[in-house]
Image 1 (cartoon, rainbow, N blue to C red):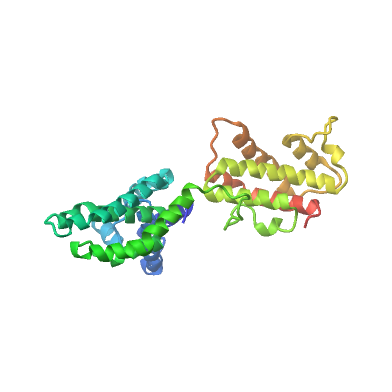
Image 2 (cartoon, rainbow, N blue to C red):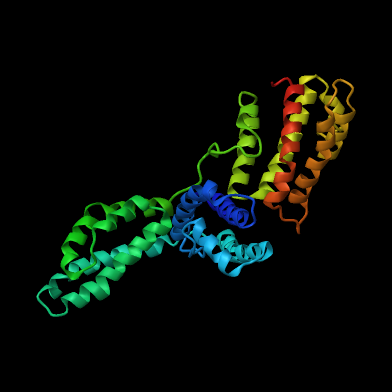
Length: 340
């Protein structure tokens, strides 16, 4: 789960707690969903090293709290917002764990300690060696695995008792698979490069992939980047790519009707977006729908600000409020360009 998805889950949890405490929902209708979501949120926060501030394992526990000390709807809203607002800020600003060199250094230290154990085995310092030196390094390794998201490797620690008598058993578990596999994965992360082409995003929150599939390869890839940027929270990049797709589709529309000269300067270059939009709206060859006519200027505004305003930083809400406009215009232009 990426940070944007986790934020959505936390917001849903917050809203559910407010809803049941203000008469908008019944606990028995949403309690199971609340508990399932709580487990997911807890696991994701733990992997990031962030404490979960929500003490209520189910909504009946929350019910007891508000009945005891929060008499008004407003006091309950304030309590929940004060509970979740710092958490949301923490998740938004949290940087993923990427100190791969530290992970490898800790593995090296574990292996060096294993080499030293024989000198302590018949010594009174054996227990101290295992408890004070060796096991803390194992706990650190498990923490690294959790923070890296290597949950399959971290699960192997369930067989380790962290007692002096379990040293050889723990060494067997780690040597056989966990340490070699951890080293392989971390070294791959250290040497990894971006893919030669952007992958197709899992979600198409801004523009449906089905709308552009089968059109032009470059149009499909721009659409994938739009959805990918939104999915990762890169909202300025998303807005700029939305602007680019509109420009491209306008040009495709004029070219499909064999009138590209109407949107070119004497030098042969295409107009800037403002003039492209004006030419599209005034072209008598086609009739653009009323909704698309109204939407085009709004799309230009968000794209221009993200591309040219050095103090403007796009937020998710900026993209969300133009998604409907964007889909309307993109679909209209795809049909006018005879791609659909």
